[in-house]
Length: 313
Image (cartoon, rainbow, N blue to C red; front, side, top):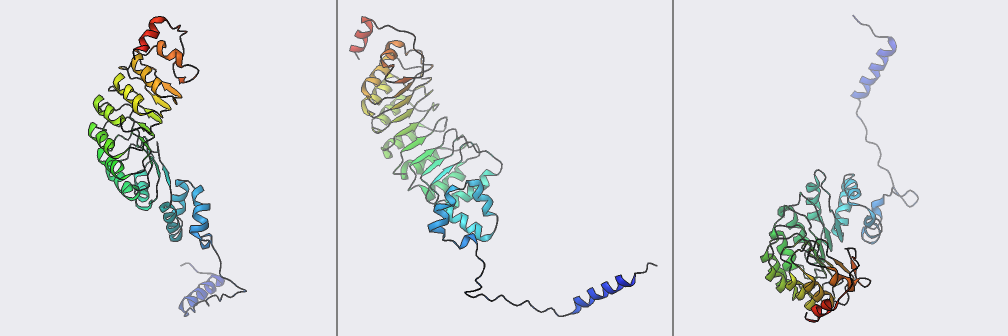
């Protein structure tokens, strides 16, 4: 049988006696002017100092890490998100991002700029609550390559975002003629518009659409099969403030349409026409030096036939 040393027996006896005693509560600290209570960062005014001077410099990752620290930190982060004006998640496809997005959709109430390009996890179910809480203030929305949403998510943007200025929908195959018709009815203040690679939109729909958008300065129609010379003529007639246009891969356009466009848009600064086989140096050469063109010059020399062609436009 194992025996204990006298020192060990005394130690165990002391522990046993401590457990049997009635414990007395420790006295509460007394605070006074000379002995103030301890302060924390969250005692600083949130609305006047912490949110506008600190939270705006924290990334979303920083805010979510801070949110996990305490209940007070959680309330502070949610108050900061409520006043956040921009949300940039383009290309963010990390695991569980959809869980974090639900928090953003619930907390954000004053968003003005929304960038969600290439978010493969984004669905109507996730996006619609965010739009419902922020539709009054949004003026820039980027949904390029959001392949898992539908035109249902576009409805509140079209109908209720009255101050919309920038809309990017490149490679959104779900964009239909009906959605563009709704845009024509409800939106007239757009200055930047991108529907590159949207093959479901017809020529007639685009012609009607551009008759209303006379404030456009940046336009991307790359690889849109329905873009023809007639569409370019309408753009030139109604979008006189146009500065940049992307027509890469629009195989149906020719010198005729490009000439009509460039003659009607005096503010044009850049013209992108790579992979447009019917657009030649006959129309591009006179523009070089005034307009940036993404295609190198071929040393074209204009002829009298060339001048007669454009006098007929």
